[in-house]
Image (cartoon, rainbow, N blue to C red; front, side, top):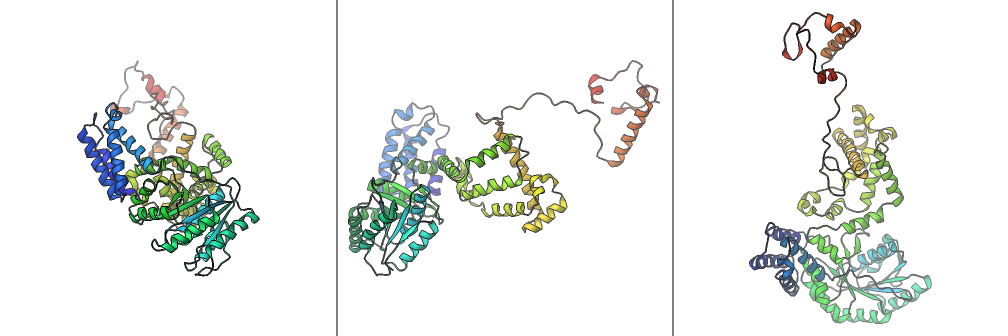
Length: 521
């Protein structure tokens, strides 16, 4: 969603590189480019004005003029101001001292409240809570059924005594749900309320009545990140009518200009708490302003990547794999290779994971073209191998490769590529696990590697054999004859054409080969 904004900002900062000192004209030009980039990204005008003023005030001060690298200092200032616009520090859920904690969802119809209720329930479940989803949207057709399906998919409890479709009192359902949660010992109640296509008095009154009935600990305003400037207008209307405590962004995986969604926190004074960025139930996470600012500026989000890895990878499995790699890598098999790929696949889309790495914005087009089904094809190839072939891929010859290709529905070339990639991956991971750095790359601080050894490799012992079978047979016959004649055969043998183009005839009686040639022979 923020790719265009990221590209514009990256181009702006690129123009600053190489300048030892920034003039006022440079700062004005940079501020103008940033202003255009934010407006094109659909960020609200009052937010843009406040942002640019802060950046210019700090950039014109001693903060930049005394810096060794002014361009990097400007990036730092923009990053910090972006964090402030997005709400500053990460805002956590407030839980009730005596349960259950009540969370009410509000927003327009189509913003994704019902789907988000299931995602929030699933997220709370991973945080060791026992959530209950309550269907209080009794106006929209099949809204109750949809929430029931979403709750089942998320693996959380559901409460919906009324059929909906215009039947039932949502205020009574919300009030009864609290008593039901106390009886069944659910510690979090998520109330899904009705929405409208636009702001109206009936919608606001119903939301206000539900809030008064259940006295929620959190009221979360769900905003569609794709609706443009109307997001700010709607947020202000809900703030006056319901007084929400936090914001949730939905549909962040869209390709619309999402700057308006980033304006909500600044305009309303309520922080963004969660963000939904996909269709799956686990495409949902807490919103961290510093991490989002880092992503927008193309600096990646390594912390989120680490958190995903910690949630997916087993510590015991990771230690077991590390031990295999540190032991020289010979015990690392194709089964282990497949296991690692499947663990990575559980973390989510490969392209999204790569997008969290710093500097990946420069190859965004290539990353977006990555097909996650490639992992499935790799799995099919490995599972078409015998246990012996997975343990020792070196035994996979031509006929075996053909059998594996037919069994996995792929080509022989794909099997060849997989085997080669496996050996390369094993070599790289073994080097990294043993602290030697990545093969083929220069040494980096803390990553092993370093300068290549200047010590010469020991000379090969014995004479190199020819690749020509006929010539090799002649050489072996001549060597056997010399061995049969004994050590003095060289002096007694008749003169022959000399090597190295010296021609026929014997040399001087005192001629002796240099030591290097003797060692080589």
